[in-house]
Image 1 (tube, rainbow, N blue to C red):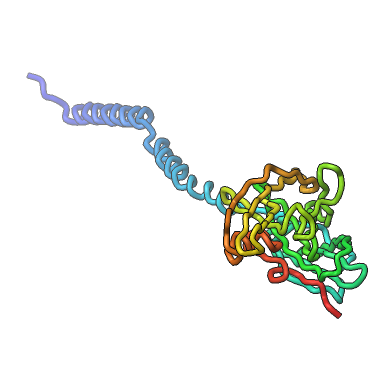
Image 2: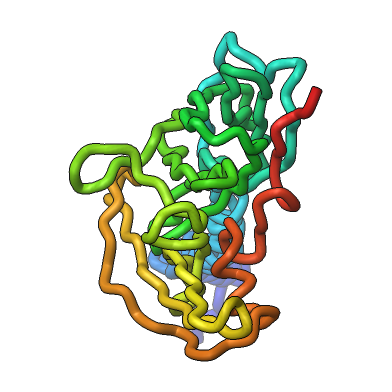
Length: 274
């Protein structure tokens, strides 16, 4: 009968345990080495969040960088409004969004002129033999808003273009200065501007009476200006009133110089009287 050696048995179990530990360590190491890297995927949501929050900030500058540049108007000149001139605020003739000034000087060499808010001054002689004091209105007419001036000298009304920073006498089809009769000729008694579709149109007016001024027939002739405002062409005459009373607005308007609601002598510069 044999007897087992206890010391040998303990050595055998020690080796078995050591071998098991080694196997466990190897298995754990393999698992850790082959496990997906959770940390590597983590930045994806962060990138998406950054892209979403940056969109509004990139759109913000669009609204702040949109600007509207106003026209500069006429360039300043060395000339200024004469000290002796009568001055009145008038429409914006150079398109810079600011009201300008119209003026008239007196005397033998009387002139009509414009001084813009931008500092430009330009003028033209009032070439008429009429001894009546001059008065003027300034208005914008036709669809392209042409700036014009009507200068009333009693016997006639002179027509000036104010385009291109200059006061220029408007010419008729024959190349002569265009004028409106004021009752001293047979072509008309006044001038006005009729609203046509919301646009002011220049028109010669003629009020004629066959009963010593008790009633009047009134005709109107539209006057069309060229694109530069410096040439005028007459349209067809049309009767706008028959047998109108002398105090009817259609008659009184036909006997004055006006444009829209502006009347020469009331709503513009007047020639100074010494």
